[in-house]
Image (tube, rainbow, N blue to C red; front, side, top):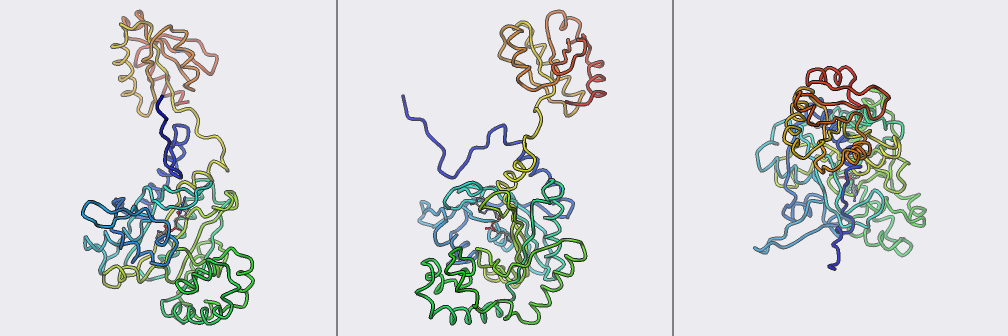
Length: 425
Ligand code: HAM
């Protein structure tokens, strides 16, 4: 026997029992994006590697150690997208959508990062990303957060998720803070954890993110970014907080929230839950007013976020348990193989007259008794029997599988009436 092939570590299959929950979350999000006036774009999975080293940041974990990069046959370095914001900016620049315009865009699909897989953290994972260009007003930041609030409510998950908020200020504020942080930490270098020592030279702000208790203790007296914010940065953040207060969205200020991608300026936020263990951020984003310029465009403000769909699905499962009900309403059985053609036609007529009705025809054949066992296991509410007598009369015998109701032989019209007045299972 040949050895069976397994999927790649950290890249999951989604089985029929899981996909309806995915679809629910995707459909709700899409509907809400339309309601907020966002337009869909579709981005390639492969992009030039330089898009991410320049966009996400040379010294981020993503670019340093998590990218799936390859050389194509021309020797060009390509990378499977680890996130969508850089690609969305590239798309906007390439097609002239950004300069002096307002754009509200969204995309969905798999992202790839070579991380250590665990619950809620995968090497292929799905995001629904939302990016808005051309508005520097904090009302946009507030609206992006409002979107998350409404979506979580619609999914019945709002109580389990809290909003964490911080500001990174303008590029100038960050540079001044960075200088002070390096000056403070350099004499303490030997006492920092190994990762933080490395970050001190390359990306000192990320040290604030360290999980190491010793490093965290040393950071207690470190210069705080909040003390380096210029007036405009402070005003931007104060206005965002005022908008959130006005629309009734509460938040936790978290000065340690610095995000793992370098393009952020001003507001950053994460929607976090305690229900999923270590991987509790279900949605995250912020403003990135310098990214368009960094990627070769003319200065254009932008802000956005991405939903981690895998994690939202896990949370939905943790909170709502088994879902959904059966995927079928009607299971049609066929008495004899020679009636299969007529049964195919009848089932399709039924689907056509009762929109949304889910009808599965048994094509495995065999004894009616066995077909009924399959009907029962399918979860359908009704079984139909299509036999010689039924076909000759242009009817079907209906049996109730879950309730004690008399069976009846009904024509298409009577069947439609019965099914539409009872409502699908
Ligand atoms: P991010 O924080 O890297 O941001 O990812 C956003 C969300 O994707 C995370 O909060 C998480 O829910 C999910 N996620 C990230 N990595 C994994 C993983 N390995 N497995 C499962 N889920 C994961 C971005 O990607 C930015 N592009 C978001 C953004 C858009 N900012 C502005 N616009």
